[in-house]
Length: 459
Image: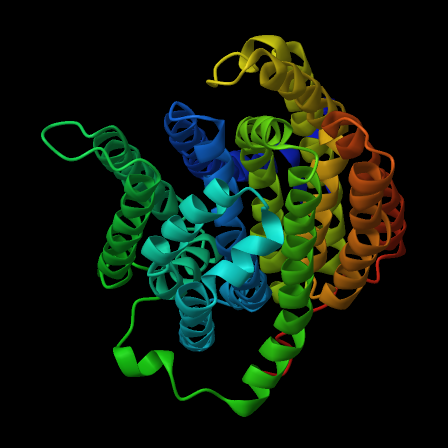
């Protein structure tokens, strides 16, 4: 009897909540780990060609990262509505939100496609000075530019699957897509099974081929009868002006947030690349490993947006607060565990890439920095992309993210690299001061309770 009281108070059943977290977060974690692991494998294959090739792909992917983060930012802002509409089982409005997101992202994809094909040299020169790195990076960007158009459908659809708690579908899609990407990359990068050895260009072809497959799989699953929000083509359009106004109001800060964040990350690349090609290649390799831990941990953040958003849509604010507090505890436990693993295995992990002795040393120290700061980093990410977005508190999240990156991290990156001429791992450590600042600000905001809002009221 005593245990039952402890496990269930005020309608909050801890065991049931943990089961739901596992049911939602586990497939998302698998998806993230598969994505990050196979991306790391791609980096390993390119790295076998040399540090110049690895650096070139790292530079080339910056424009794709900026695009994806804008895409993710807008779609994440629409996910607040999809999750809350799911709380009231309003599938008609969920379809309209999906249709609006796809339309906006298609327009964005066209803009980036044109930039990638007609402004390639100017974009690449921002991040790299090495002429060979510039040539290889430009080739990768042009070939892979079709991904901008394909992702406009795939990302909103996968977010819709998650928001309606069909989380296994994005997991299945990612496993098929990224496995195919790795196989095609292996064949084309190294010229296997009679194909020519294409190097960096082969990696680009493998990526865009995987995006085509991703598009087709999302189209297939979205039209199946078992899909929760399945409807006619026309049901995704005919948008209500008030709904669109609210979606845009909520999604604009998340879009700015992710765009400014991604620009900040790309500025790290611009700064760290000026330290040297070998140190930057080590950073690129370490970042690929760090993302495996990062993506797995962020599954709790995605679960937070889905689960807390659902309860806020139902109008149950006390339960939402209790649920969010429990999710934060789970997030901290997971991120601390992963941080310890990253630090513990930093030495052996630094030897799996085809780097010089100098590069492996840099990579080891970079992994230590990532590992020690991982709990704060993951907590901040969960608060911004999970808890605060679930309640539509996107403006506060935007100002916190943008301010900390551009007022603290980016200046420190360039000062460390160009003025103080510090080693890359010390420069990276200084930029992580922004994690501590965000941790404090976001914790105070959470405790205030001002983030809890029902954004679909009266719709």
